[in-house]
Image (cartoon, rainbow, N blue to C red; front, side):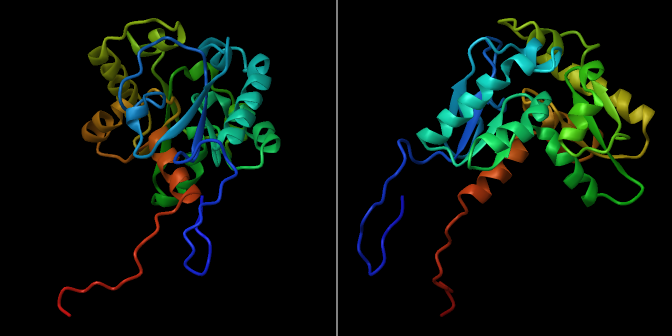
Length: 253
């Protein structure tokens, strides 16, 4: 929606829904989504659109390569764009495998995975430091996922799959989660990563359900933490830049 020239106050349409620029293509789940999670609408500083892909389970995305749910995600992306989304994302970092085909299917920018931040974050660090990836299931995060997100194949990776709560609840789509235990799973995994790789200078969280625990990881390990929240807030800020008042309102004048 925009205003015409010559000071005419004319609103111009063309979309169904306004005010939300990012569309989120969603797995079909029932596990809890606390603030910070991509699918808790209170997470975001701006409104977002959601579209669930029926039958798309966490296991299909993480363990099965996602092939059987690709068409559903493309359909969801098209529906979101038609409704009014100006950019598309997904709620699983493993769906970096969908990046190329989803980007080809719609005429707006697509950011399928938090992993797409790794290369940029690496460029911010000193030469002797490396980005570490925290994932929900390390054995399933293959080189194909990394290549699709332009992640260097020698990037250190650790998973939460050996923890007591987080990975089990998400991957089995359980209805309850012990938040304290889930937080500890994150801290234990990053502690393992830090002990194995003394040169970790930043963490990128692959899983879109990990963002609620980013501040805890940052506080304990004293390195920057990037996740789907940092990625999509950045993404959105480009889709709809802030309009600043050009008036130079200096109180001294």
